[in-house]
Length: 386
Image (cartoon, rainbow, N blue to C red; front, top):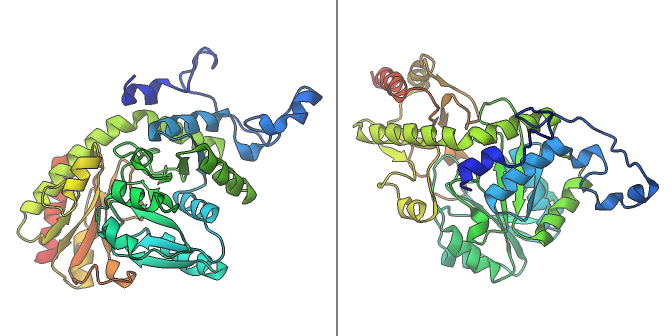
């Protein structure tokens, strides 16, 4: 069964659902056991309390786990929770963590404000660093390396297989934020990564109406370790309604991703052809520094990337963005609608990995007709440069 078919047909059974196409929404705090013997063995049940989930959650977990090639997975309330719970699982006082300098900004905030208070130190490494260069940053107390490829806002690519092989040989855990590829166009666990995480909020749910994260573990041992941390914090999974929305979105995700990819590539090529555009940061473009890594390891591209234009004052930026018809301004992506926001990576990074002072714009190319999106952005660029 091919992936597109599997995501639609697995983990739902209309015969067991009174003929309904979609699995039901099941609410529960209390889980009942009909006999004392079953109560005594409740620890062997998949759920013995509402925090552990219901059948509404389990179908989504199993479908996502199978897509990622995981032993198993856990739903958590957000993509950020997927990051923080994973880090808390494999770090302890006195440990050292490696994080790419272009990481998701709340990850940096967690490392600097929370982990530092727990006597866990963090080193931010150059996003394009090779496995050999990262090896030079390792300490005896290094226990986890966080990976993100392509990275947030500037979309540098990492050689994930080489880095994973290098650190796994040293007993260091690898955790990858795989939200950009949606767990579909790239399979970190197949390339030696221990934990793959993503914000299901984005492409899986796909409709900008729910918050949800997923942690996929390659081995049973790591799945159990995450399980212990997850329930120790009492984070549970999510509401049954949110799980239902994400499960529904997952079934149509491959079809949506094909349009996202096509629109994004057309947009990126159009932007690259414009004389006023100084650079386009999209790994699927041959001009991108990480194109060969993307081509080797990924089966497709999603629709989030960035581009640079000359620096103008804030009023010019407002003139461009405020009058766009088909682009919203908001701090998310992965939904059906297009988004465009200004970004300033130089104000948060440790390294001089973003030295220029051009205007960086992050774009999420939605499912609208690409000609409408191009026409709208073309008019916006003309207002900006007028």
